[in-house]
Amino acid sequence: MFRNNYDNDSVTFSPQGRIFQVEYAAEAVKQGSVVVGLTSKTHAVLVAIKRNAEELSSYQKKLFEVDEHVGLAIAGLTSDARVLSNFMKQQCLSQRLTYDRPMPIETLVSMIGDKAQLNTQHYGKRPYGVGLLIAGVDETGPHLFEFQPSGMTQEMVACAIGARSQMARTYLEKNADNFNDCGREELIRHGLRALKETLVQDRELTVDNTSVGVVGFKETGKKALEFFKVHDGAEVKEWINSVEEDADAGGETAAEEGGAAAEGMQVDE
Amino acid sequence: MDHRPQQWGRPRDDVYGAYDASYMQNNGPNQHTQQPIVTGTSVVAIKFKDGVVIAADNLASYGSLARFTNVKRLRTFAGTSVVGFGGDVSDMQYLDRHLNELAIDEAYTSEAGHTLNGRNLHKYLSKLLYHRRSKFDPLWNHLLVAGLDEDDKPFLAAADLLGTTFTSPSLATGFGSVLAQPIMRRYAPDEESAAKLTKEEAVDIIKECMKVLFYRDARSMDEYSIAVVTKEGVELKENEKLEKQSWAFADRIKGYGTQTV
Image (cartoon, rainbow over all chains, first blue to last red; front, side):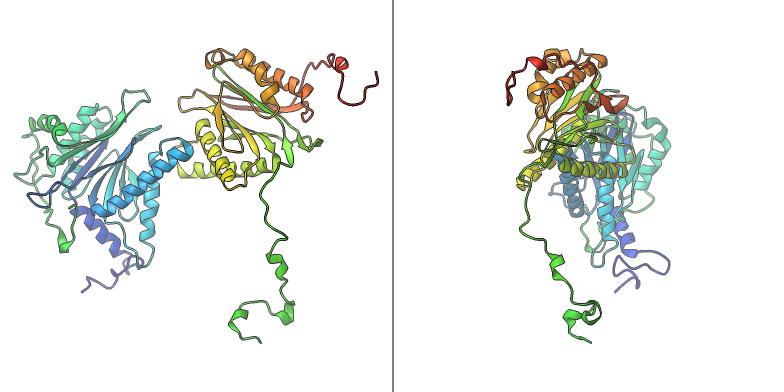
């Protein structure tokens, strides 16, 4: 019935000092399809692979707008992500209403961090089964944050989470030094190339399964914002074509198996 | 021993005497603020080229009695903005404590140093005032907020006890709105002319206003606080004295009570 004695709830440590429910929640993140985020001096970009439950169904959304200056990408349980996304939307609106300012990204992220941590410390609750990448721009510039079900949050230059995201992270680490000075288009292409690394053989980026979210400054050194926008379908065609041309460059193929949704849990669908 | 559950954990009556329940309730109904009691008079402020000058005298009146003569009615916020308080002094002190708390909260929640600028602070205070008036328990103040906006441009706005807000190149509360505002408008009728004023000119205009207010406002005093807010920070002087007063006009004034001549 149980894998061990200490995974019934999220409040009890195992003698080895682990909290299994939190670790299982982190597994749910690895089941979700991959999302990649990266930042430059002027922009923060999110790219994602969407999945469809079956041939005739639509593709599950992976990128969400939170406010005009923030967006997020999800990997894991979509329904849990919607709870967090709605919470973030509300907090951003309330910040605009009471202070007439856009929510600082760091503050917003620490809010969901606190919220998620509570679930790991209360009997009868369960951790959120979703990991997030939060991209936004505030007065201190573009930011990318990673969020994990444990409540851990950290700022990243570039990051990838979800199924087979290790391949994307390897690409990002190899190229991380170049991101800072990238223009908008080049940054998006880096994102898509990282995304391509994660694909299993004979799968490819298409206009149906690829999402791109961009937020940033309109011009370097100016304060005017390019609001967060999710690009889908025909809008991503140009970008996909532009990374197809250098298709033969990347050699690595699948190592870890993504696997189908485990134990009847619907993930990203 | 009394073993009834109601008595568990209570001090024993036979040792300590019966509990005096009258401490638990206050006498009479709970009242909301109906009128200000100890009050501060005008606050005046004007924008200039790269900031805002704001001033208020150091008097807190109890009715017509000059009750406290060393009450500072300007307070800085986060080293970047100044709030000037007219109206009830106890409500001012409440707001002062509240703003201290807000500044600490804000400093803790963000490590990157996002601070609330003048515009953010004014929006917050106006919401707070409106919230209180909607509870029919208003904070009896008229506030001026001087600071900078997100583009480091001068910012000046008012909020009153109803939560009403307005902005202008120059603003004054209380008696200042009839006595000082016309003087300031002569120098800065619009944003363009305010943007041409130098710091020295703006300070002189404010000092002139404070003098006229002392001449004609019977709830005012000749000691005042003045603050200059710029990108460089807040320069606050709290014990200024009015200079070069001339009461030559006074002996020509007729009326106001018993005439001897």
